[in-house]
Amino acid sequence: MSKPTATPEILDRLLHSLSDTAKRLSNDVEKQAQQIEKRIKKFLDEGEKASDRWVKSIDKDFREQLASLRHEVEQLSHRINEFLGQPAAKPPVARTTRKPPMTNKAPAKKAPAKKSTAKKSTVRTTPAKSRIAA
Image 1: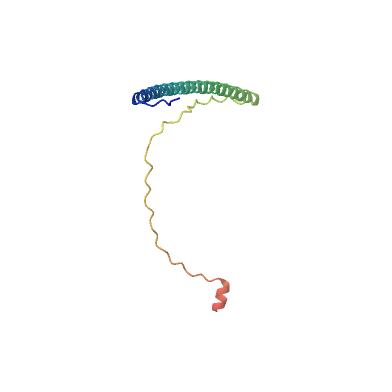
Image 2 (image 1 turned 90 degrees about the vertical axis):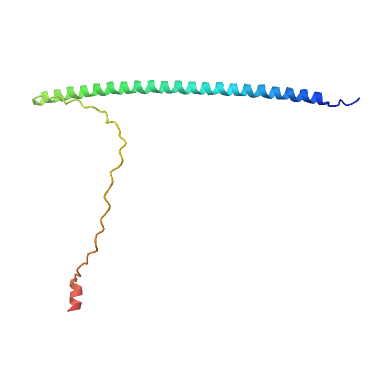
């Protein structure tokens, strides 16, 4: 049996076929990467929306419970005042719990520290020293 010889035509066709296959594979991988990226973005967006809804729901429930608790405290305060025979106190003025918006102000500059001159201390003698000196 004779060994088939590789002719330039066969090698060119094989090289061209491999090149086409590599391009198709590269395109397919690129498309899959884009699809995966879209899916990840979609999942992140959905997760963010769900988290926002969850936080809003918790905030709403918390505020409702807080209002209910305030109402109950006011009722108890009124009952206690009635029991003790004291006049009912005026309901407290509603406070807002919102903080003022943050501003980006530069920190205040401090004045440089003044150097103080060293003071000479007066020598004080203790009773033991005064006996030695005498």
